[in-house]
Length: 284
Image (cartoon, rainbow, N blue to C red; front, side):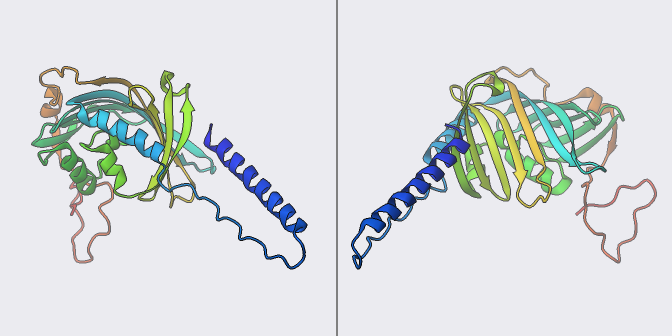
C-alpha cells in the first residue's frame, strides 16, 4: 500500500473511532463517568521495515570490493521567470575499495573527469585542457570529506561510495518509513523508503532482490523553493575486474595545472590584499 493510501486509511479509522466514541458516550446514563479514551498509537519515528531495507542495501554495497555504475543526476534551479529549470549530468563511476575512484562526467555543462589513486586526486577539464591536482588522504571516505570541505567537490551519489552507507545515514537520522513497492523505477521491483535527517528529506527506490539503489530524490528542508535533486542509478557491476590504469589519465597528466580552489571561499579578510590578475583566490 502506498504511503498516501496508508495515511488516508489511518485518518478514516481515526474519524470512525471518534464517531463510535461519541455514540457510546451519548448512550450512557447521565452522571456516568466516561472511560478515558485510549491514546492514539503513533507510528515509530524509525520504522523497522525502512531500516531493514536501508541496512540490506548498505551491506550489499559495503561488501563489494569494486563497484561500477552510471548515475544520471538532475538538479532544479530557479529561473528568471520563477519556475525551476532542470540541469542534468551523467557520471560513469568506478570505485575500488579502499582507496581508488574514477568519475567521468558529461552533461549540460562542460565535461569533467575525476581521478583518485589513494595519494592524489585530480579534477580534469578536457575541453580546456586544465587539471587541478592535490594530495589526498589514503581512503575514499576521508578523500570525499576533504574534497568537499576544502575544495567544494561533491558527488550526488556519495552515499553509495562510502565504506558504511547506512552508518553515514544513521548519524543524523530522525525519521524513516517504508512507502511500498514500485515495479516501474529501474525496470525492476523496488522497495521505496523515505527518511529525513541533517536537514534533508530523501525518497529512495532500492531493488527488492539485489538491494541496489535505483533512484533517490532529495529536498533540503531549509530550501524555501523546495527544489528537488534526483539521481537515477543503472548499469551496476559489483566485484568486476577493473582495468589497470583506470584511476589515472595520460591526458590529465599532460594538461596545464591549476590550483584546487573552493568555488565559495567565503569573505576575504579586510587586511588581505586582493589576488593579482590571473591569480586564483587563496582558499583556507
